[in-house]
Length: 313
Ligand code: HMG
Ligand code: MG
Image (cartoon, rainbow, N blue to C red; front, side, top):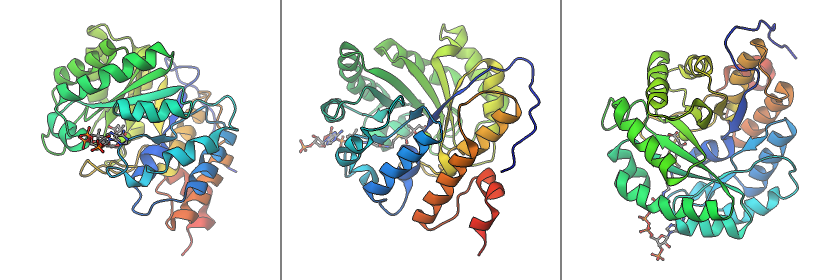
C-alpha cells in the first residue's frame, strides 16, 4: 500500500470531517438498482474503514428515486453500526415521518439556489420548497434531530448558467433561519473553480454565516473538486462531502457526474498531515469491491492507482 509523503502546510485545519455520500448520492444515480444487502454491506465497510458520517439513503418519493426505494428495508440493517452518524435525506413531512419511524437521528433537507433545479428536483419553486422544509426542520429540532441543509447549484446551473453569489447567499441564509444546524454548499454539476469558492464563502461570512456551519459538496465533472476543496480548507472549512470510489450524480440535474472521490480526498489530506480517521487501504478495497458489484471500474484516480490489478481488461 503506497501512502503520500506527509508535508504539512500552514493555515489548514488539523482535522477534517468527511461526510461520506456514496451510498446516497452515488447509488441514487446508478442505472441498475443495487440490492439492499449490497448497500448495507457497503455502509458497514465504510464504517469499518473509519468514516464517521455516512449518508445512508433518502426518504423521498420512491417513484422519483427508485434506486433508493428500499430505505425502509436498508435503514434497520445498519443498526449494528456504532459511533457513526447515519444522516438521511428528507424532502417533506412524509419523508420525515418515515425517517423518524425508523429512529433516524440526523436528516438533511435539500434546497436549490435556482428556480429551475427546485422545479426539476422538488416540483416546487424555491420559496415553496422552503415552505415545505419549514415544518420538517421545526419537528426535527423538537426531537433534537440534527438537520443539514443542502443547497444545490451554488456555482452554476445547467438550465440557467451562472448563478449570482447573492442569490446563493439568500437561500443559504433562509435554510439557516429555518433552523438547519449546518449547510452543505453543492456544486451539483461540478463547474466551480477555486476563487469562486472563496468568494462565496467570504460572501456568506459577510452576511453572518460562520465558516464552522459550512460544508462543501463538490462534484468532479471538470476535475476541479480537489482544487476547490483545498480553497475551502484554506478558508477554514472542516466538513467535506465525498463519495467512495467517486460514485455519484443527480438524476434530476443534467451533466452532474460523480462526487469528489473519498480516496482522492483522503490521499491529499494525508499528504497535508490532516487527520481524517480513515484507513485508505480499507476504503480502497471497499470501492474495488463495490465496483465489482456494479460491473464497472471506479472513476477514482486513487482507487485505480492503488489497485491497478482490479482495472486490467
Ligand atoms: P410531488 O410529486 O410534488 O409530491 O413530489 P406531492 O407532495 O404532490 O405528493 C404526491 C404523492 O407522493 C402523495 O401521495 C404523497 O404522500 C407522496 P398520494 O397522496 O398521492 O398517494 N409522497 C411521498 N411518498 C413517500 N415519501 C415521500 C413522499 N412525499 C410525497 N417523502 C417530492 C415532491 C419532494 C416528494 C419529490 O419531488 C421528490 O421525492 N424529490 C426527490 C428528488 C431527489 O431525491 N433528488 C436527489 C437528491 S438531491 C441531490 O442529489 C443534490 C445533492 O447531492 C447536493 C448537490 O449535489 O447539489 C443533495
Ligand atoms: Mg450531490
